[in-house]
Amino acid sequence: MLLRTAGLIVPSLILLCGAGFLLPVTAQLSSEYQTILTLAPYPVALIVCLLGYGFNSSRILFAALNLSCAYWLIQNGLQTSLNQPDAFVLFSLISLLLPLHLGMIALYRERGLLTPAGIIRLLAILLSYGLLMLVWSNGSLGLYLPNLPMMMLEMLLHEYYLSEAAALAFFLGLIPVLLSFAFRRTFTDAALLASLISSLIMLSWFNQPMISALFVSASLIALAISVVQNSYKMAFIDELTGIPARRALQDKLSTLGKKYTLAMSDIDHFKKFNDTYGHDVGDQVLKMVAAKLNQVSGGGRAYRYGGEEFTLVFPGKSEAEALPYIEQLRETIANYPMHIRNQNRPQDNEKGEKLRSKASESEIVSVTISIGLCEKTPELSDPMAVIKKADEALYVSKKNGRNCTTPAHFKPETKSQRRGHRKDYA
Image 1 (spheres, helix red, strand yellow):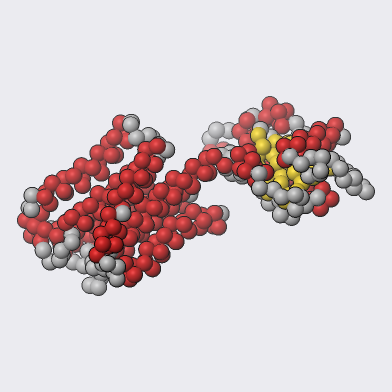
Image 2: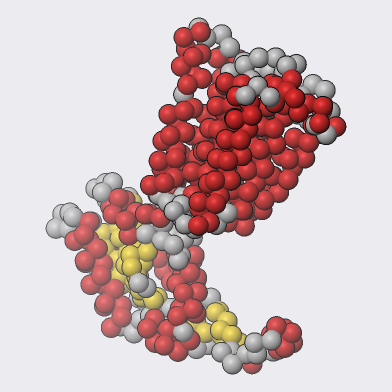
């Protein structure tokens, strides 16, 4: 779990580290290259907005608008000393709007863009920055300086350009961003967290040349990458079980070399299991089997083929070499006790807690799988032909009583024996 969560944020953190590494380098660039770099966030923001719109990801689009609006104000209104009243007030307000909007975006649920909720959220960002742009363009922002609260005038730390109010705004924005990342664990939430960190770095060291161009670009690229990652996950990862889906299997089959073994597995009597306990429990069975198959060793990889069928791919292995790992999986699943809660359990939580410890409230069953495997041979040079042969071997396992493994070619000295279980649907 920790590795998976860390994997979500690593690409974004690499981008932020890259921006920090390039910061001293960009200060030495010629004025022409610096101009190009300051213009780069605008096309990137446009691309990210189009990606958000095209993939119906409102949070991506809103975050890109939030960053690009703040960046436009920075480039057009803050390329001067913050000792100027207009510049100081503008910087102070951007320091509040940027993190607070990111915090609100993290809380949003994906409800589409062209919906009442989506339009209201879009207007909240555009109107807040639009009003700020309007007052700034009139040259009247400096008039509000005497009315600013002391928290916006006092710096949190003297060596950083971050007021006490801005620090509070970042803290308030960080809470929903972290909670959303912790509970949802999506690439979008990782990109939002990176955007908040990037904004904090940019505003804290605001005196560094080109810092806004680098860190806003890094944030926007992180948002764009998250769209690609989410799209990949939807296309190649099975939503229910969390393991690679059939489309990912097709890609894998196209990269296999001259030697490999494919195994087709099927949950025994899965329809009967569904009819007895319901589809919710059936889904739990699929998740359990997928989780066990995903732990395959020996260089194998598990894929959900469809329904209750799964495929195991063993690159560089023959049937004889893959068989021990497959048998280990089959026995692990067969020996795993599944607790089925009584369908007549009380709806009241307190009563349920009192009865939960009683053995009568849960039924222990065993789930078994049947497996057929086949290696690539001169006669079976096409992966789909190997899968078809493995499927035929799978049906032989079914005929032999289920909960067993049948190689298409290799004949082991002793066949695996089927074991009895608490309540065996095989």
